[in-house]
Image 1 (cartoon, rainbow, N blue to C red):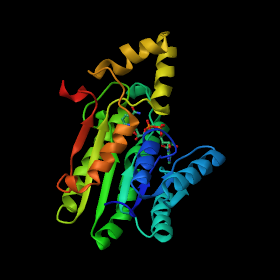
Image 2: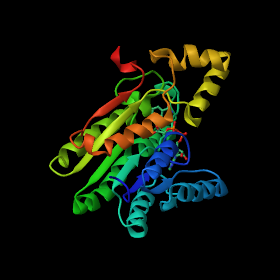
Image 3: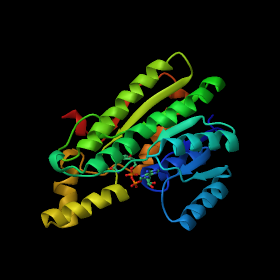
Image 4: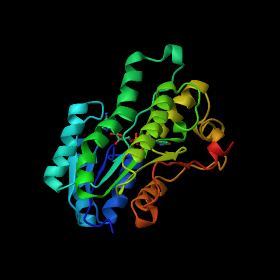
Length: 260
Ligand code: NAD
């Protein structure tokens, strides 16, 4: 059903984005990979996805903190792959510090990568989706789009913003066959979280295992990491006909975190 369509997944050289890109490619979707990393490694990834799944795969190194590069990425996808039918806004970074010590430049960077980039991709891709009469926008927010934790002011503010943007876009296009939804994962073991585990272990003089149990998964009642592949499965579901009437939701995928 989505075979032959084209999807952009921002921040797809690693973690959740890579899992989502792989699953979309597996469903026959042409992919725009995006994100940072070693050039040879990214080219290997691009070529192997294209070969394994028999779909076109383009790489864009657009920096999600730079509006003009974001616009150029969407335009390049439309020009070279023919359309952007599925847009997964996933790129994101984290910084942990008390709000009165939070570096101002980090605040600006997190707001631009984690929130504003979603606005720029959507703003640029939406006219094409409207013209073709179909589109699926999935924003990877976070449980922190629904509830807060201390020391994550920029991240929590940005992710709450993503949920608000999702709902607004969903309402604006509700009468078309375009949906816009957010997924709100709890902790997924990716390089982003592995960095937090290392930092917390150092800060508290604790073993990494203890940090996982007592700090990282403290608010996740099922005490298990979410699998990146599960997020890919949910993106596929949201792109399927069964989800045609699902729009504007912020779907918690967090082992019960926000049920408290
Ligand atoms: P990750 O660090 O493994 O991957 C992040 C990706 O974003 C990488 O491909 C990186 O190159 C890319 N990226 C970073 N800055 C960029 C920029 N300026 N321009 C373009 N690409 C950039 O992280 P992840 O854990 O897979 O996180 C992906 C998304 O999921 C983020 O938005 C994150 O907030 C969200 N999320 C993660 C978790 C988790 O526990 N891992 C939980 C909830 C939400």
